[in-house]
Image (cartoon, rainbow, N blue to C red; front, side):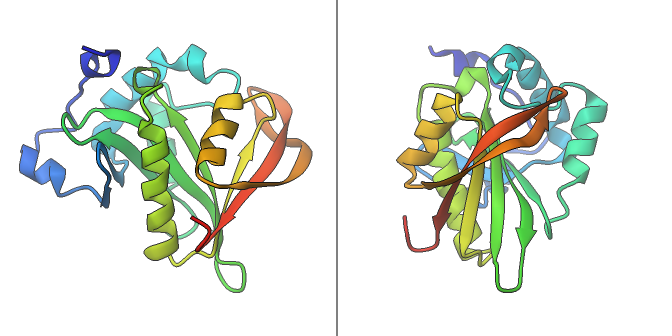
Length: 194
């Protein structure tokens, strides 16, 4: 049994049928659904177990208060948040969000994502991000999706390359993470490119 199955977590008191209906998209092994308040305990537990894996790349919510703030920022207009879950167990493998959604002539958003340490190395996030891109281009009607990645984050770079993102630029001192301004590469994909 792989590590991911040892961290199976409940997403509440819903029946298996109700849980299945929550997925916005389904792949072969994972589904994409919105992150919800009911995910708090499981998400925080997985984020704590993954803290050293995330460092120095991202800050995931590790307390109930941080999680509440995280979920509240997803207004479904300027930002939306999701979890990538295994279809067979409903366990969370990671999380993805679309931020800075801009309409008008731009029709673009910026994605953020993270795999929980228990879900790494299985291709779950590749499949989950494909589902997110389909949702972004189809349901949200976006034309362009961007990702900002620290140059040394090879796993993240490899992930977006697998999804056919193009590197478009470099932004020094771009995003403040763990109290430090970090350089980032700008990657993007446009509708019809995948």
